[in-house]
Length: 86
Image (cartoon, rainbow, N blue to C red; front, side):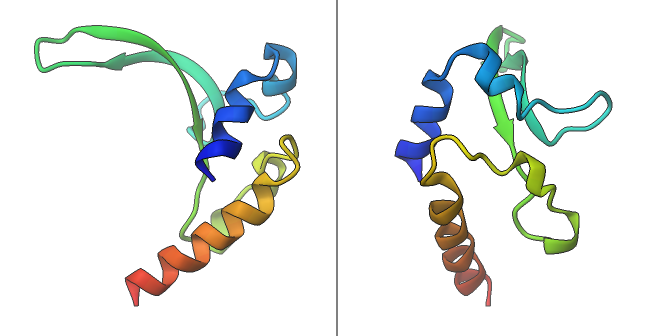
């Protein structure tokens, strides 16, 4: 799954924006400032946040279709995550 995520972040901005988050929601693709250190040093970052654990809360619109292998890799990741939790 790491490779698929890296491929996503290499896409042109307009292709990434298809999966952008809506205002006042944390899920989806977005940019912002993130804390780098305890000294309040901030750094600009790109991020992709997807709800993983609660099926009823997942927004399938945000499950990447590019790269094409992402969805299958993410499903496998979620299955392993679920097994670890049990």
